[in-house]
Length: 192
Image (cartoon, rainbow, N blue to C red; front, side, top):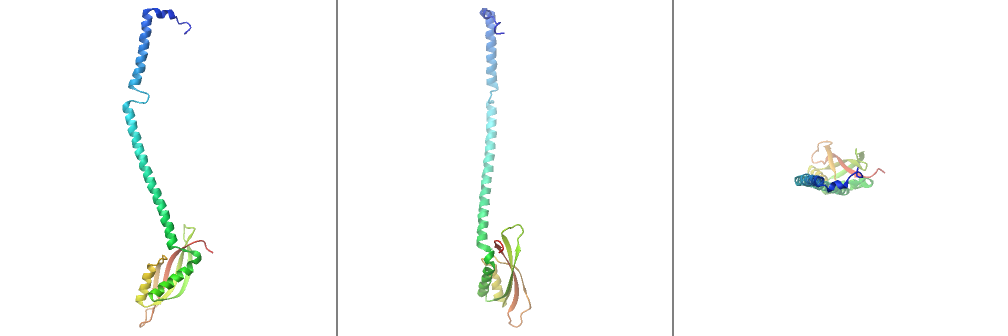
């Protein structure tokens, strides 16, 4: 079609004016599209989009801050848990001797005597490294010294838990009171 176009016709004023009006109309349409609906959006659209993006950024930053706090809490809890285990839980290889030494030390401070002691280990469900050590110990002494012993066991640095205590018989005229203690503590490490 362009080959068939007659360039001589443009020399006629009427055709030239129509071509000029058509070109101006096309230019006006292009300017209107750009002015009223720019390709990047209108100024209001851009402000709304900016506001939405600012809200999304603020929400993402808030989630990030919460996540950082959670990470810090998890790390602190892990450190505190490890510190607790290091401080209060006895290694299984030395558990019997360590607990026996602790009971004898506490009995000496309280003025009571520790009799026969039996140890038994139970697995703790859900733990691969921890076991519960149950100690059955016979202790004799007067009432005040036994109460002092209970208090010392309760405050022991070896995390001893008094599960139960019972007397075998009521005391007779100043005789020492025999009490059977059942204590629990936790040990870590594999069984030998």
